[in-house]
Length: 121
Ligand code: 5GP
Image 1 (spheres, rainbow, N blue to C red):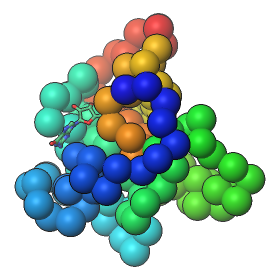
Image 2 (tube, rainbow, N blue to C red):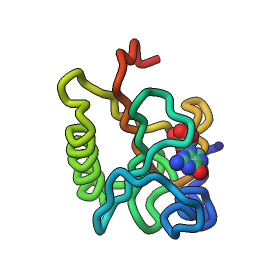
Image 3 (spheres, rainbow, N blue to C red):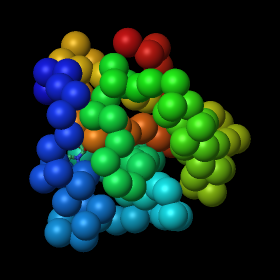
Image 4 (cartoon, rainbow, N blue to C red):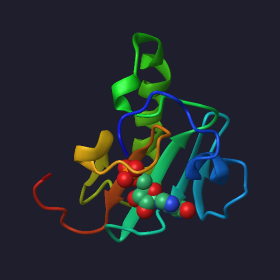
């Protein structure tokens, strides 16, 4: 998707958060929800999203986002450990805009592991 700073409240992750689309949740707390990707790119592929209406992409992040973003990475690390990925290692990915193949305009982080992942691009 093109980088667009306007948040679409009917994007697929908003609908998953509202329970309108079912998801296989791996983790949730007051701030974040993690669910298994519908088209996994690795044996373990989890998408971690903030609740509410976060920035649409990394391109929209501002200084004010630093605190929750930091907590989000810590939560991703905990999920990876809970999934047993910390021994062999894993990858955290943020796609931004068309060049990276971003398809959903709700800031999110991919947790990928369970196989050798190869070069990053
Ligand atoms: P992006 O390409 O925007 O970084 O990542 C979006 C991800 O959301 C993709 O990996 C895609 O497979 C996943 N996805 C899209 N629609 C759904 C859905 O309805 N359910 C789940 N669990 N994942 C989805």
